[in-house]
Image (cartoon, rainbow, N blue to C red; front, side):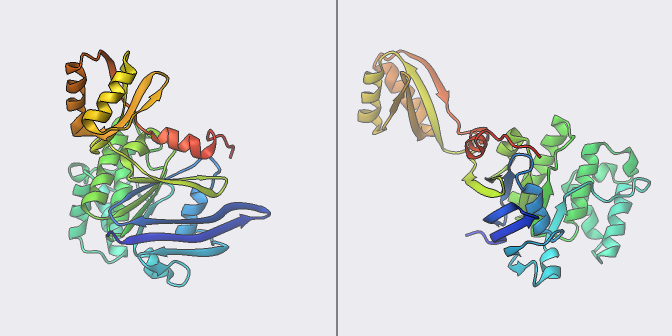
Length: 304
């Protein structure tokens, strides 16, 4: 079982008379990309700032790699890499010189610089001045800075803001590499639901400071899928599904919905064709992150 490297237990925060974080508990495991979603003003950034001890929590407990952020602050922060606002870089210096400066400050082996440059795909542009970098390149250099000390947990607040589709995809691919192959836990907030659907392994939805839902994300490579089958002879089709495949089906607005192993789909279609069932469509039905989000937040409508 994967180790828990970020844990929040019954965390609360009040500003004046307003309770902005209400008894939140969650845990993030190594090698997991964990999305943190919510409408504007729901408490996402406040939670992240409490994890980083940029603001104090009123009550509860936050642990990073087993260390209490209040009682063992330095040890906890050594396990974290974070980008909350724009990364701190010198634009008149090259990318590699920025990394060398940070490596010297933290007493990090210079060999690590080449490793992170390769990881964020900036090796070929490492000697260019940061002022000439695109926004996507600057984000990736900021990511390289946070990875220098080999953190256990990477915390990112809206990392794809302002990036074009190509930049978003490249950042997504890099984060998957860091998480799934290097074992780093990535805790990321974003309002781009389609991107989070592609990137995350699990998501938590927060609204009005309360944790509304935590859900695993199903990706296209999963072996189980939900299908909608459109046919004229619904009763006959449902009987075949039950008798031949032992599949329970639901009839919704004259369409048959089933959940099956992906490998069974061609066999089902073939069997229905043999039985002279006229199939007009077979449509995959995904439980999208957008549905999860709006269901949890009752429409996601909230002002700052």
